[in-house]
Image (cartoon, rainbow, N blue to C red; front, side, top):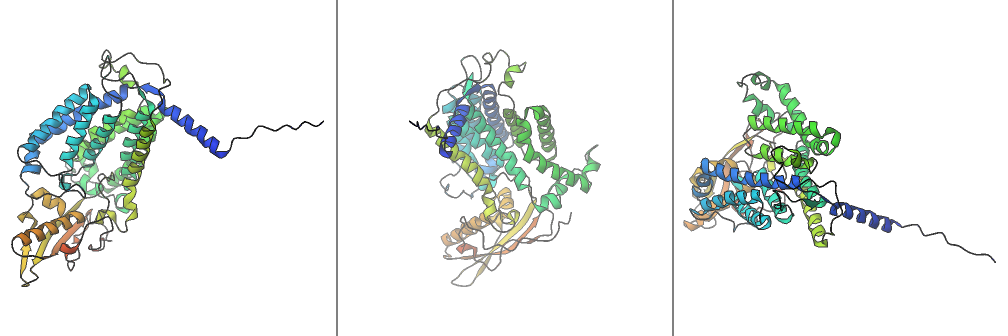
Length: 461
């Protein structure tokens, strides 16, 4: 009798994928030291305190929210408007108080959620005030609200957290670096060393380093080095052999940018945020931290299964943080000129853009023409930002159209008589087609059709 035997079935592709996903899920659910995320929460809270204090000290609450009579809301967020005086003063005081509470860490989810809402509300009141690091702060406040990184039983940090949360914060920081690096791969940055050439030459009188900053090759070297830094630093920080040198580069890079360029809190936010790429237990080895936290737990350990809903959120969040910064690639033309999809894309320090705008309003019933200066409606800061940003120009034209309608000129036509813009040291050129009735142009997701072609000349500097 012949006995037939069957070899065990080989696992198919689907079973291999399932096994790999199970391994990945187990890896992400393993619990690691929560000290670095706890210290990040403390730093984020103190950043809110400093940010709020700066608005009071410099009078920015009044300058940005009280003095303007017109604002530029974000699409879909027209209901977000500054609170009547003294509401915004109270709101910024709340930001500072919530920052202190977040740094302490008790009830961090409620505190973080309130800070996320209040800070984001202040940031999204007016496009004029958009800053990349304010957007970053809003994002990480959302993550802090969801992550289990509140105050531990015996210190400022939780003893352990699922590894998933550490990687999600690292991912968000990497998006800032990599998005900024990819955005620098442009002719102006790499082939003309602009706008660094303009900015560095303004520091030619600085002691010791000033003469170097006046040399063109230094601008080229710093431009290429900046792009290389952004594109490589997350990986250098993650690799154990290069970690210490990489963090030293982080400090040197951001201290230098803080000294040379007026970019607010961004360098400091990135310096303390980049510490998350280090070993998660590093704070427990700092002399000033010892005694504040629970004893270090050795190595990762198996954690509890995380809910499927959390994985769905993480996948959606990651997808948005990848696609939103890259959406500018779907638009034709020079993005520095059109600024299609420029915000929320980590386009940091990419351009020096100056412009002037004058509108002409035409009464369709009588043909009478009225000249309009931006300063008739806007503060100097608003006028400066609006004159070079196409979506804000459209919003301003609609603002003027509606104002004339209230004054008895319905259906007014609005034209950009003058719209001279200088991009990265080039001679000024018209930005807007002067024959287009801006009152009829609707801002949307498509490419702008009312703009003149981007300049192709070389920068003058």
